[in-house]
Structure formats: structure tokens, C-alpha cells
Image (tube, rainbow, N blue to C red; front, top):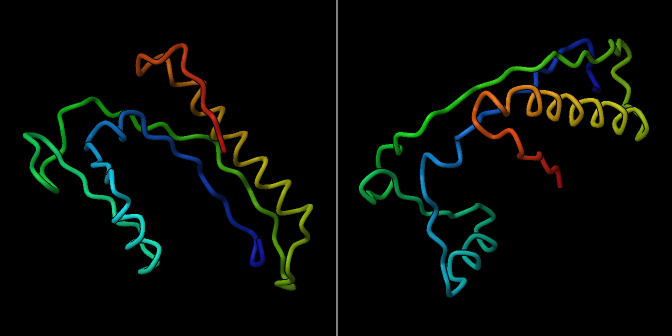
Length: 116
């Protein structure tokens, strides 16, 4: 928003989270290491339980939404909190539109997108 005059296209990937399985650390060791190193350490396995292995064979659908257009800001001034909130709401709304429009095509007619 500081520079402005750009478009951001919301994209949603259906099935992406099923390509690999993440391993949960029951002792919290990876969580402590992640906090200390300031990176997220998440081990995952693919097909045949290979670490970092090939992805599982699941269908994936990529859906594109309408671009959210950000206005030009020739002075490069910092946008107000209200402006940031307005365009954030537009982005979230467009993500929901993309999800709701294409969810039945992927086989998820009753799923809801929850944004936290």
C-alpha cells in the first residue's frame, strides 16, 4: 500500500495440505528449537513415508480470484490503519469468494473457509 498502484490476485489451492503428512513432536522439542532459532521446523513425509519424499497422489485444484486493485500513492506515504484494514478485508473477502465459488468442483460442497 505504501507504493500503491498494484494488483494482488488471490489464489487458493485445494488439496495442497494432503500432499504431505506432517509429523507431530509429542515432546515439544521441535517447538522449542523453532522458537529459539526463529524458524519453523516441521518434519514431513510423502509417499511411502519417505522423509521429504515425493508428494502423495491426490488431486489438486488451483483457483484464481479477481484482482484486488490498490490505488496509486505517488507520495509513498504510510497508509492509515483504516486504509490497511479496508484492503485487508477486501483480500479476505476475495479469498472467500474464490473458495466458495470452486469448492464444489473439488468435492467440498459443504466446507467453510475459516480465516483466523
